[in-house]
Length: 193
Image (cartoon, rainbow, N blue to C red; front, top):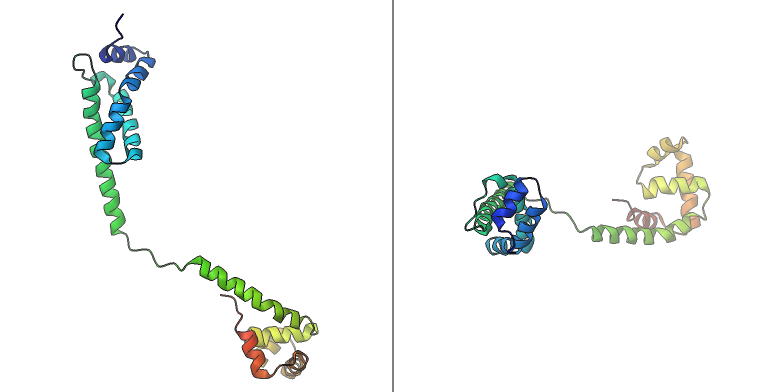
């Protein structure tokens, strides 16, 4: 017994036996896939287009036209329409992307991460030095030398007189063994972004 023609399988699928359409798919999927590849130049786009061809064929199966019982010519006609639509969609997408403003230049995050790691590395010896100070002296050093507040601003932040801020800072400098200029430069270059 001869195998059923594509037209017979399609009629069977129309009558409710969907497995018959699976046989049509198995017979012609490679030919449709290769045709789509030759039109699109991309295997993944051809795969998507092949899926669309068979979805459209299933949707319009009652209108299918066979040639001597074969559906391949009609399937390739559907494939041409699908490829045209896929190409048109791709062109529209590309045109839309070209109309977008160029993205803002984003700095390389590796540079920022490296800078942050360097800051952390430089802070460790400073924090070790500060650990030898009394808490009140640490607060004054952090506010005046590290955060750049004036004596008056640090006094407000700490709720103490300006003279107290000056004397604590003087004691801290003496214990750290650095001059006013050296300490400011040393502490001022390590600040968060």
